[in-house]
View (spheres, rainbow, N blue to C red):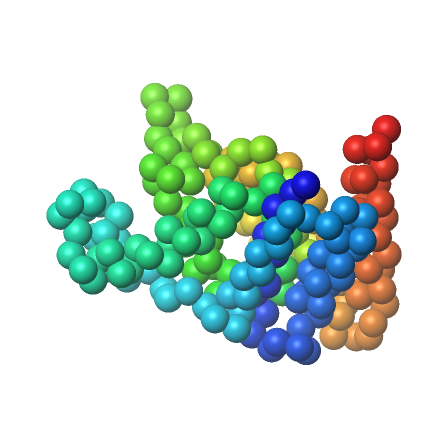
Length: 208
């Protein structure tokens, strides 16, 4: 049995292509093997607050020296890190906004990228501490940014997410892209087919 965390980050709710694809992925996974727990975190509907001076101060203050305001500022961040640590499988919905990720997904990342909790500095450089996770990132893009396409270099979403997830120790990451969603449903249907294929292959590999 697995714990599955889904993180959606679109601000448009039921109209979101990326969120719908995340839900489809979770349903496909449940059909194959119901997880012991599903945690749904919609940072598009309820974005974490931007990191401010209070939050930064709380990071570096010792537990006994933190003010009430600093402890309150840390509470959500600790909760988000705990969700990541507890999950076996993580599914992230990432709509493309201005060639990058949504601001709500960026604030979620800022809350879970915590020195001493999700990564640490060693004599050999930084080391990610969120290990042994299987991560699926489902993107929805108005245009087409596939390899070989003229707009490929404008995709700052995929390399950033690959980098930051890897920095935190999550290096087993599979991307599923829905390209061209502003021009019709073909990209969504392609992503839906890819979701079904990937989930089936994951469980076929487990059974082999």
